Image (cartoon, rainbow, N blue to C red; front, side):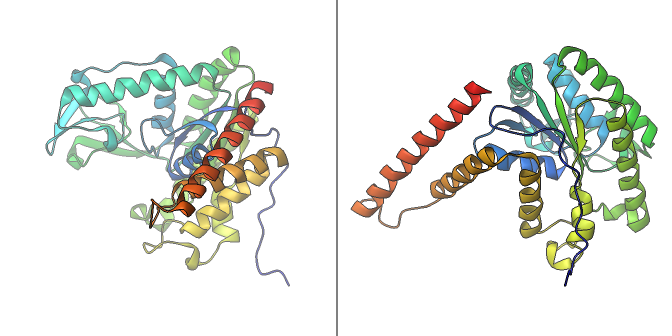
Length: 317
C-alpha cells in the first residue's frame, strides 16, 4: 500500500562533488542546504550577505559578487540605533557605520575571490513580491523594519524574472561555460499574502524558472517546493507556526537533494564528514579523563584522514 504521492525527479543532468566550488544564495533552502554542505566540508559559501527572498535581490547580490562591489557609508540608512544596507541582511547591520561597511566590503571581496573558481550556483526564490524604495526607486533586499510608507510593493511577472536571469546567465556562460545552476522554490508559505496570494507568487516563480531553464545551459530545477506540498502533505512536517517545514522535513528534503545530485563516492565522503561534525559537537563531562582523551585523539585522526581524502578528490577534479 502506497500512502504518499511521491514526487518523481528526472535524472540530474550533472553531479555535485567535493571538487565543485559552490555559492548558494536565496531563501531558507539555500541557507539550509548551503550550511549543511559547508558542515560536510564542501567548498561552499552559503548566503554570503544573508537570506534573500525575491529574484531581483538574489540577482543583484550575484552581480555585486561578480564585480566585488564596494560600499561606502553613503549607502547606509540609520534606523532603530543601527546602520543598515538596503541590499543586505540585518545580520550585517551595526551601530557603527564604519564597522557595518567593513563587514559588507570584506564579504564582497571574499565572495568575489570564491566566485573566480565557482562552477556551481544553488539559487532559491522565496517570493515574487518585491519592495521598492520610493526615494531611490530601487528594489530592496530587506526593509529593516523601516516605515511601510517608505516602500511600494509589487509582484513581478514570470517574464520579468525570467528575462533578467536569462540575460545575466548568458553573460556568465560566455565567461564560465561550465557553470552549473540549480534553482529551487522555497516551500515556506508567505501567509501574510493570504492563501491565494501565496499561490500566485509561488506559481509565478515556478513559471519563471521553467522559462530560464529552457533558455539557458546547464540549469536544473530541484522540486523542494513540490516535495513538501505533496510527499510531506501533513502538518506534522511543519513547525509550530504551521508555515515553516519542521527539522524532520528539512532533513528529508536535504537527503533527497543529496541522493539526486551526488554519486556514491561523494555521498560516502559526506556521511563521514557529517559524522565528524556531530562528534565535534560532543562536550566532555570529564575532560581530564583518559576516555575523553582517547576520543579526542581518535576524532583528530579521523579528521586528518577525511581532509586528506577530500583534498585528493579536489585535486583529481
